[in-house]
Length: 297
Image (cartoon, rainbow, N blue to C red; front, side, top):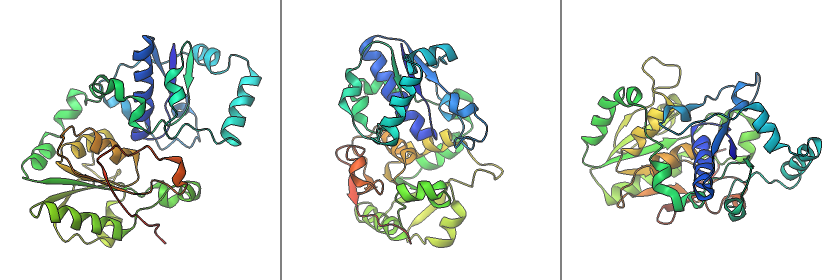
């Protein structure tokens, strides 16, 4: 049995599920999901929801006794070893760790697994799971038609949220500055002068007040608490319907671009994904264009 711990927002959940689904397929084994962190009061995931269940994924929730028997087969000793690996060895499985995909038997997967290498051999089977449930898909038909009606549509994802408000997150994550987005827009316009940009952000008001786009642009995001706002899964699918993409250093926008299966898509991404640049050397697929992104002051 393979149990994967889901943790964080939708983009992280998708990476975790994709890696575990791929390993389950390789091993011809059962896959179950550990959603414990979303049920703990005052947990860092309190503001997060299990958005991955908006997709038609093969979802079986692991029972507490199954989690404990695989996660901690040696009781306190297992917990101590996991603490040492994470606290001192910094082993969070963020980047590509090929040894993960060679494991067999009962496995508890606890990490981020942010590389397509984890599921590249089972890519189509994994991506086929990331389809919105019918009622959620129907709700965004008008938005999708607006995007598809443009000759050249380009998504721009501007991530702020806890990258700005949370000191711990701010220390680790890179915040793409205004200049990065403006240079990316100008680069796209060099290729596609008639491009129409669709803006996705968890802080659209900040974007409106701080970034001027020298191009035709429409806001898709209206903020999570506004009437008419979309679910994260719906915004991600709408992002994927654009022809081309400008990313922030966010797993959410990564998946928005990745789910676009067009071989002709242009994807522009920051050349650094976080402040520990050596941590994530394998997150961007071949062919995605990297441009410099500096820290905001």
